[in-house]
Length: 250
Ligand code: NAD
Image 1 (cartoon, rainbow, N blue to C red):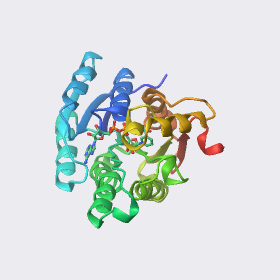
Image 2 (image 1 turned 180 degrees about the horizontal axis):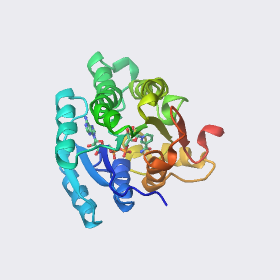
Image 3 (image 1 turned 30 degrees about the vertical axis):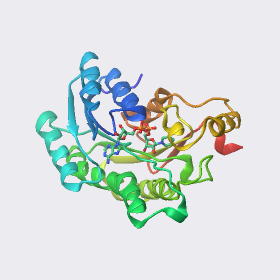
Image 4 (image 1 turned 90 degrees about the horizontal axis):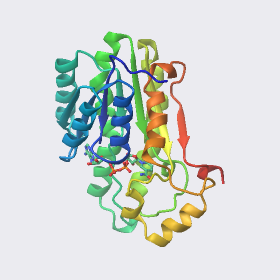
């Protein structure tokens, strides 16, 4: 069983959905968790971590704000003395037709989904280097590598393809420090996200085309993220692990 005893994990966008499931799965396995998000529900997730017998720190962090990200890393070190795992999960997916997409729309999605991961990774690296140990997990999407079921997400697809390239190249830079970095590439995960970009009919048709015949549960993705965030994934770096019920194989 994955063991995070005495490990400290930071999860971004941890108030809801996949981030919340990941924070709680890591706590279940013995991690102390830094729960960062821009919405209040982060406090409830931190409380749920504590109910599991682990320490938690809830921080109001917009990942696209470099100063806020740096402050969060500093606060984590002050509180726990180390950062063993970072899960770059925070993401947004505002559907906008390309013809109507402004440069600001484009930039905002890139800033949160991709530059945010860059800021967070840079902020935790000094501690991980000093420890000679670290695990970074980036949440990409199948939308980055194939045409998804939903259109109107060109900025999102670009950010998620960027996440895979970032992961692959960064792996080479940080491998000598004992730090690994990997991506998970989720398909349709049942967090209510699909409802925000697609109609019920579109979702039904998309689910019918998934070989496993259903959306994934956030906990099923959290299991894979937890493995990549654990000591047990020691020989995996620069990889992209697809967790999609088989949709990209059709
Ligand atoms: P969600 O909307 O339920 O959760 C995302 C969380 O990120 C929210 O709590 C939100 O408040 C937070 N967030 C948004 N902007 C932020 C910012 N600037 N700084 C910090 N936190 C911020 O979405 P989800 O479905 O759980 O998705 C989580 C991640 O998984 C995203 O990166 C998403 O792109 C990716 N993903 C989801 C699916 C899916 O089907 N659900 C599929 C592929 C990839």
